[in-house]
Image (cartoon, rainbow, N blue to C red):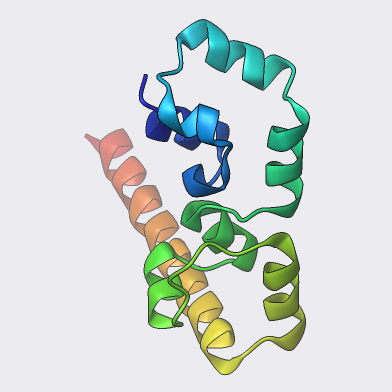
Length: 120
């Protein structure tokens, strides 16, 4: 598989991976080996980052679009994420609230559909 696909499956930011990883296709067996017994570079990336946007958004409790609206366009390290959580800028507070409202609405619609499906 392509390195980008492997990085996505490993939940790491591709540009932060070693050049050897970025330049060579990864077999399914190699991916399984990386998942089962991660090398130090992978452990460090997972712990310290930089992290891909989907993980940054999840750690901050916002959507990926919310990151963009907040001006976050680069991958962030764990330290940067922790600093944002400690400082809680206005955009982060607003986006977290908005994201929670979206999730609540999704749960409501799902429950409504499930109820209608039971009633048929």
